[in-house]
Length: 283
Image (cartoon, rainbow, N blue to C red; front, side, top):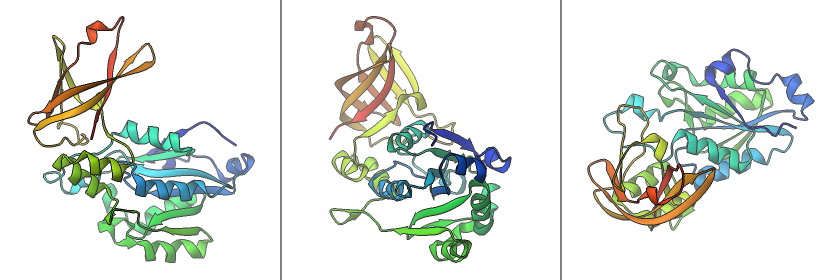
């Protein structure tokens, strides 16, 4: 049984760089158990999908996801930003105990692949034996392949298909869209309930400016992927500083100003070199 967390690209899969079925069997698996999706936030609803995949004990568990939200290709002017960075997503998957992730660089060209062709590639290249999805699952060209089509295609091939129910919190369906809307309203109490944790910015994804104890993080909208910020205003923050491989946490107040976040923290008071790792929005 492999314990090392593996990250594969779509090109890796097409070039047969994933484990063969014989290799999986030598590791004690009958195949793979997967779930497919954007997984922005890796929220409470996603957790149920991941737990379903992990429940297939005789399978090598993994996720097929995207390096950026497909909305950045189809609706770039309307898209307001990600909830999690790619690194945060990978960290969550690893923490959950998954064995591998396939990361697809979504493009308009990739979006033209028919759903059944996409599923066929995954079935063959990943030796899929189990798949879990929500009832509103869609994939492939124009999202035409829904859960019924997925079942019709994979069940005859003896793939176990699990439909996972929606997760509700206080009569609110847990979804990335609902969490993003709550962030844009600055309602971090609801965000924490839907996400299962505080909303956190990955500082490596921002342009960071430091001057005389004052930090300012700017959204880098030149990239397809950037994390969403709440409305202009003052917020309670919990910043995480990395020093000598140790994580240190400090509570500060900050202000969002026109797609940037500003707060005061004099890191020069710390001994040695340190790096701003992440910033959480407290309730």
